[in-house]
Amino acid sequence: MNREAEYYSEPPSPDELRLRYLTVDEAMPKLERFLHDKYLEGFSQVKIIHGKGTGTLRLSVRRELGRHSLVRSFRQGENWEGGEGVTIVEFTDK
Image 1 (tube, rainbow, N blue to C red):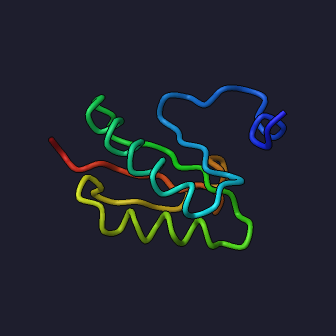
Image 2: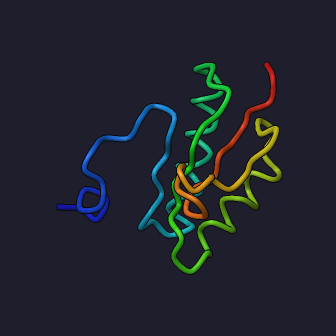
């Protein structure tokens, strides 16, 4: 069983990307592809699950979001959304 399957009991919803247990090098291409695909699919907002950990992945994800052309804004998840282990992304208008 893989690490993700051990943690999650349900498959991801269409608007979320799970990056927990990945290295920054593994996560960044997945993030780029996910943002592009979800923008084209018409989503206005998505959820990136990076976990809390040491903060390295969270910081790298947010750094990338801050310079991404499709991203209008992003914020830490509220407690009920996953808190600091989650980043909520709002896309620019088409």
